[in-house]
Amino acid sequence: MGAGYGTQDLPWKKINLQEKKIPSYWSWNDLVAIGGDFRFLNRTTFEEDNTSNTFQTDKSNLYLTFQLIPEHVAFYSDTSLAPGGMQEREIMGIFDLSPGKSWIKAGKMVLPYGLRIVDDGAFIRQITGINFSTPDLGVEVGYEPIHWTFVGSVSNGTAGSIDNNTSKQVVGTAAYVRNSFRIGASGSYNSNDAGNKNMGGVWGGFRWKKAAVLGEADFVRNDFKDAKTQDQFATYAELDYLITNGWNIKAGYEYFDPDLDIDENQRDRVIIGLEPFIVPFVQLGVFYRFNQSIPQNKLQNADELTLQLHIYF
Image 1 (cartoon, one colour):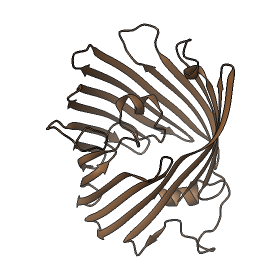
Image 2: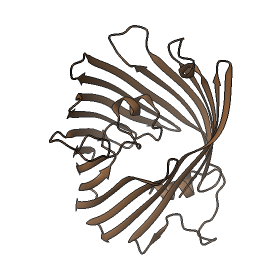
Image 3: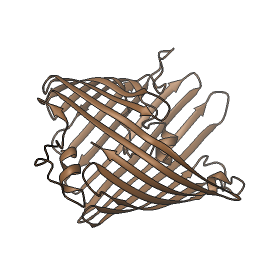
């Protein structure tokens, strides 16, 4: 469904892929499927007295699925090729107990918490520690009856490394989903030798005509052994509006309080941008982010201009 929408409905300039014998979904006999995601950036950072510019590969991922027993047993791999060299983000066996309704996953995976937005640098992805850079080893169980989603996981709680104790991280999400909106809540408990990390969040999304809104708020409590408790709070909000077919305008806001017991240490960000989906498989983007933090931290106050090339299939 995602591949069809991304190649046929979303682009500004339509191309008859079937006429050119180009598949919109890269699969063989519905048993093997392959996909990719490449994001290349040019970023200018306007730090006080020190403006810098760099090219960088933000993401380069390869997705592979084998349907070993169609609608019952599958093997899935999500491999990051760059930056930082080749590494498995997710690799798992998927067992469909009731196709389209319930499943069990076992292996390395991104834990089922909150909105799975693409930006790992967002405050809600950083303070929770659950993002595409920190998949964990464990088991996930999910059930989706009609308009509801229930997902839970038990994992090492070590962001992908082997556990050396009996403690585990437990994560759960429940959501109510309709055609025009969704609302959900997530929670996590993780105990280890360094202390406990507990967190909870509420999130949702709403679509009306050409506009869509996403939002999430998270509260995190870190109980460090032989140290005080640290409470943190972060929010994320995003508005997307399709000004015309293939051209999306985005505005976002983030807020982060790294310690609720300390005054005037908050950070926030505002982002505005334009995302044209020119032709199938290609998206461009230009984004400007305003950063605000404590005055003495010049880097956290540096605004950023990002130009992006995104190729996907």
